[in-house]
Amino acid sequence: MAALSDYLESGLLHHVFRGQSFPKPRNVAIALCSGVPSESSSAVSNYANGGPLPEIPSGDSNGNSTGYARYDLGDPSSEGNSVWTYAQDDHDAGSGLIKNTNTILFTTAQQDWGWVSGIAIVDSGEYGTGNMLMYAELNNPRIIYQGDTVKFDLTKLQIKFR
Image (cartoon, rainbow, N blue to C red; front, side):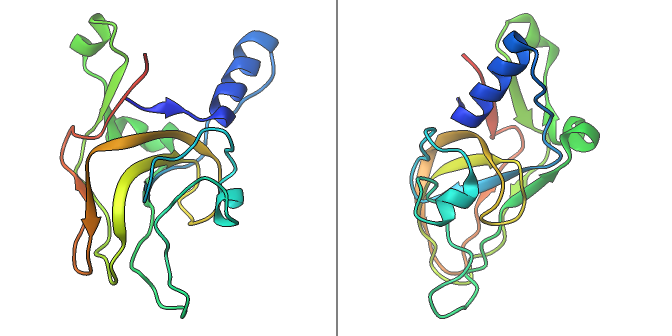
């Protein structure tokens, strides 16, 4: 189950109950995290400066690439139906559950990434930018070593509201 960030909660509340505009993101991406993100601050750029988004670093202190990059899911308006599935059975049961329609495969680690135990759904595919929309703890966290990859098999990344 994914939790909503304060950014998304506030935007939706103001959009639904106060008549303020809250546009659909033009891009959605998955960020891998070394811990479970906090919802209290939502601007990803703040996280890059010591805030609560513990995203895997894209480079080390010597300027070398770690091989990490967010997994870009594209524009949900044009690509969302090809990225996520929402089964009629799930809808009829009132579950509000969507699942990934393709295998999600991150780039190969060029250095040890360390402990990966959470994800964040963000509105930018570029590292250190955008707003966090949702976050979740992984059911099967693990240490990622050089040469490893992280993947979510077909229908294994599931987002559900309660």
